Image (tube, rainbow, N blue to C red):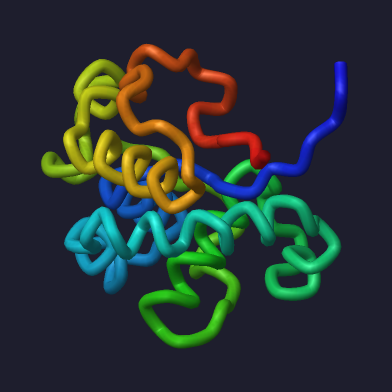
Length: 147
């Protein structure tokens, strides 16, 4: 298998809001939920850049959870103008707020996620008439290889 660089991380405003809530960003998750799909598509390369540089993530957020830090740092940077550690280092437990508490099926069929994927593919010059997000398989659910 040939190694490749991840150039885009595909996610949705809903997923970004959920991850901010998990890490205690109660003042920001609503703004993340309101992000336009085009803005999330714009962030896609930044999420990938952070994901590919765990040492940078550790400088920005010492001890950060590697599975989520690239999303948290990237969306905080978008919303506040600079990356910073989240309020919490570990995901909080308990029930998500109702607007964030959707099933896996609902999240994979989210029209905003489909639009983010379409925009990222279109900007990369890749055909956009391919599979929908729920048809791609859940290899971490968010990564798209670069060309």
